[in-house]
Image 1 (cartoon, rainbow, N blue to C red):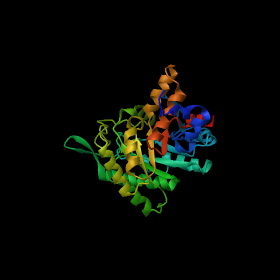
Image 2 (image 1 turned 90 degrees about the vertical axis):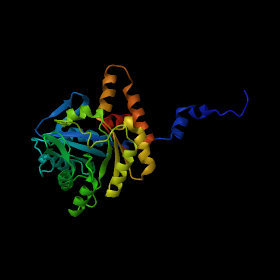
Image 3 (image 1 turned 180 degrees about the horizontal axis):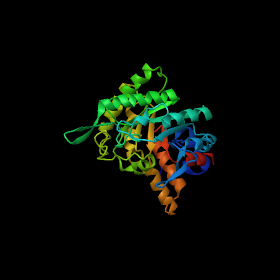
Image 4 (image 1 turned 60 degrees about the vertical axis):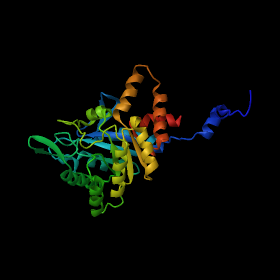
Amino acid sequence: MSFPIIRHRRLRGSSAIRNLIRETQLHVHDLVHPMFVIYGSGIKREIPSMPGVYQYSLDRLDEELREVAELGIQAVLLFGLPEHKDETGTGAYEEEGIIQQATRRIKQLYPDLLVIADTCLCEYTSHGHCGVVHHIGGRAEIDNDPSLELLARTAVSQAKAGADIIAPSNMMDGYVQAIRTALDAQGFEHVPIMAYSVKYASAFYGPFRDAAQSAPQFGDRKTYQMDPANLREALREAESDVREGADFLMVKPALAYLDVIRALKENFDLPLVAYNVSAEYSMVKAAAQNGWIDERGIVMEMLIGMKRAGADIILTYFAKDAARWLKE
């Protein structure tokens, strides 16, 4: 055989060598665990389309939190299911709203656990949209600027309850600036904003809408969430959020948008978050339950792919599973 020969396999010859030169590392501190909190007592209700994911009442939160803490996961993302819904999503910004109560409970039990509060209206509105609906000439439209007032009010109420990070997911124009201004005016300059900067109008959200009971009651969210075909628009959205004061940028979903994650990584220097969303979770769970795939292998490969694409942080319903596997 003539030379020079490049023998790439020399660096794959043993587990120790492969570990030594591994370019992308996944750590438990990269993971955020989403949680669904509901009113009532004694409730731990599995979500049918998301095996292994539950809705918890406040009095049973400790079961989940203890496990999260023992696994070394440092942050949770809270979604709330209100007792009542109305046109303006009052439950999102009430002092005794479900997220506000859950945040205080978590901070009482595990003060060092980071609480990230989802800041949106869709779980709380009777119409299921992420903003205020106005009817014009028989047509319903999402009114951007009045929605900002309610989102800012929600963010302040969450910060007052003790949320460490505000995570607005509504995709209204100007939402970061509105929330930043409101937080600063109330003395919460230290509370960062994890902006859902690039959130696509995706088919991958179906199981989440079951879990959060947040499906729109009419139409869709395509006038405010992004067209899955667009990448340059994602850069414009992210740039706006950076200028308005975002502290993190997020891409949602993650799996079908790794190119978008890479593009944001190359263009911005803020911490970058990938949201491994509900259908990405449910598809793997369903295939694994049927014996078609190796769940652990698939999950860890997906998460590494998100890290390799540029994600610094991964929100994932696999957080507990991944944390266990990383310990082994």
